[in-house]
Image (cartoon, rainbow, N blue to C red; front, side, top):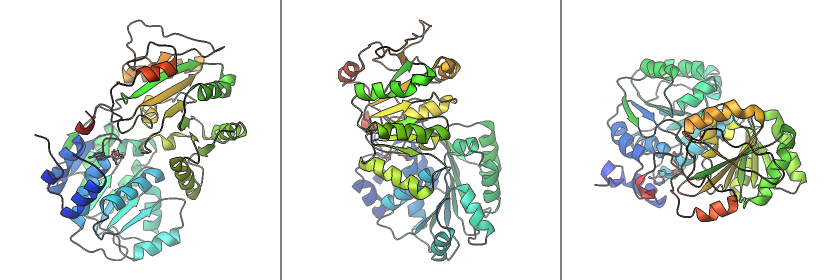
Length: 421
Ligand code: AMP
């Protein structure tokens, strides 16, 4: 029998908020994790973004916190996020799911005024959502006391590891009360994260909903090879050839981003850059403009690859093939979300072969090599590799898109919730 949100024993206020979001049934991670969190147990959740994991921990947290009151500078719960964007997104989720409760939240991220954040902390905070660096800064200035934290969430732990945040996390967690509930979410479980789990979680229950790094099945993936100096022209050709409503264009190096964005703007595309060297207010504004359709092509670094949940993104371009295969999966997962179809294009050069091999090994399939007019085609070598997407054989991509109307819909990787099945 299908589990409903009502079966999960959430408070009427939370149920109402969930209903207003239009969610019909819990996703698998929600179904598994919520009852365990409600029991007060520690949880290790193996789940990627896109699985509904944010509501998986936010909903029971809201209910657990709804009973008490926060004191000045003493937050009652803490959610650690690797990037400012993810922290902001979780804060938005918290507002949405908590709108019928009277709980307070503060978002502590770098790039915003510390004074304003300190003032907010003075008012008392139920949920603190923070990136590790800024939290430590404020803690070390005495602006914040962590002795009342009852629930700790470490989200995207493997991403924290990639970004070098584990020492900060250890510092933070060692300052928290011993008696608390800890929830750790990660898409993968490398040894360093396992060590963190053993050290900071007490008899955790493991819930797992997706094999690590499963690519979204709804994303049709293609590759074009070109000379390294012809990447801009190749990108433009595809932009003209395809029906691009909006797109993320990923680059490997921050320093190349502004140049490509300016070039596209000069060529009349509504492009804008997004990377970690921009001040936070500019990053937030750029994302807002992308969400509203004012900007249609976002030229970005991997800061935008994980977790950003923008509905209806038609295309992802890997202007550079990522060095890390996991990043590939996260990048293409920005399209084909929530049951819609998506399109990913890879602009490759001869030097990318070993990265492509690693990606194809991870996604267990080959990416179709396409030939644009005047471009150099390099067909895949192995006959054994199966296509990464079911319509991988055709050449005419527009036709492929049209022919693919009845294809699988997920956007949730292998962890497709029942409501899309
Ligand atoms: P997350 O993995 O937390 O980033 O969530 C991915 C997306 O799934 C977000 O857009 C949520 O609004 C959406 N979502 C979360 N839970 C549900 C649900 N039970 N039914 C439908 N959509 C959901």
